[in-house]
Length: 178
Image (cartoon, rainbow, N blue to C red):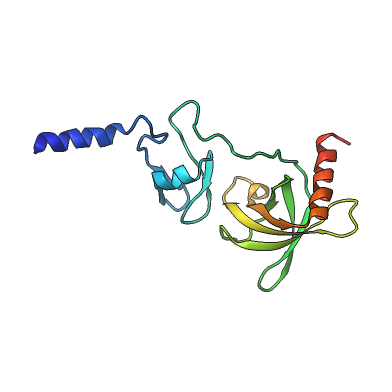
């Protein structure tokens, strides 16, 4: 019985060669929550939101080539655009750090939650009216050396076709240096 236990303990200690995490504990540096391998496999990015506090956690993978490449298919346009939205008791103006065809990062130090939905007005230059966007907060960066690096990642859920085309044209013009 002792030999079987020792064999089992060695297997656990060694970890599976197929596992990108090799049973190494991944812990949120902010709230100290332990992130399970199952959760990390569902979130195959180099940074994932903590399942407890929502802070972005950098994941250390043991293999040189991660089987989980960055899955963003759209490039980001580094641009500061005004974004307006309403909270429970006030109307807020913030600014983007970058925008892509599918989402944006908004600089903010306000409290938000993962999967929170937001009705946003994105003020794009040369457009007569702000672009109306319904978005979902998909990651939160609360702790950074500089406050301007704190914010929320918003994935576009609903945007009308005309507004999307106007936003894509604006991003293209910025990417091409026009």
